[in-house]
Image (cartoon, rainbow, N blue to C red; front, top):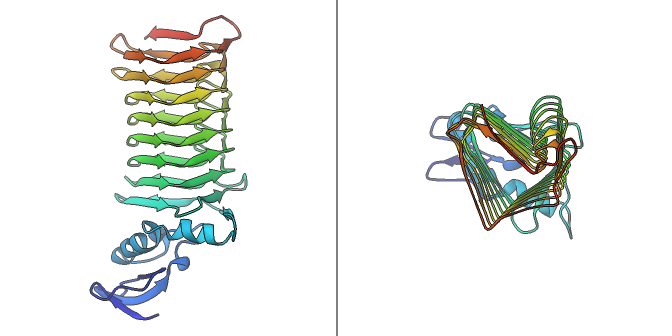
Length: 307
């Protein structure tokens, strides 16, 4: 490709590989942002990977190419393996124009995060993710933060925790104007699972029609940070055990519900919310509704427990 350097960047849809220290040659974004490959797993030196991420990912190249490929509408970008991000970096994947769709085909998780990597997704749809472990669509283990804006996770499944999202020993998770729906897990957290990690905040977001063979049909938090739902909803979700909508077991943490709804969830017990932890666990409910929830073994919508 053409020669490039810090003072002589590449043209659109290309990045500088910096294979000669402060200079190198331009490579097409598609060389390192194809399915199963990322800028940080493409064999590039650190400076090249950083320029690839800035030019191709943060600039929205992945989302733009996926949208353009569909002509009049977005064509799914099919992934055969998970996109992996490892290291203390911040990765932004953004779709421009018509939202792009990433499809795991029921065979692959879509994103795997570790080593402090933080991920922001904007304007995307993640569908048909699958994992034999945790996190059908997104898994973080020892990761940084996760932020979803105007993003949907649909019809994903895990054999472990978190049918849609599973974050363990990781940073805060934020959903803004985003949805998680139709997801399933064998253990806890049909839609979202947070364990030994940070806080979970939903703003103008929803978790719906998720299910789990354990507890927390929509959301499950254990030994994690605060839970916050603002102008959000958890609905039509099912748990075989407890917490059809939400299971929240985190000592010294606070649960806040503001102008939010838990509705039409089902579980063996605590159909809407199981709220446990220690005697220091706190919570507040303001202008929120808990309606239409069904507990099959005892008619309890909310269970408050201290351990």
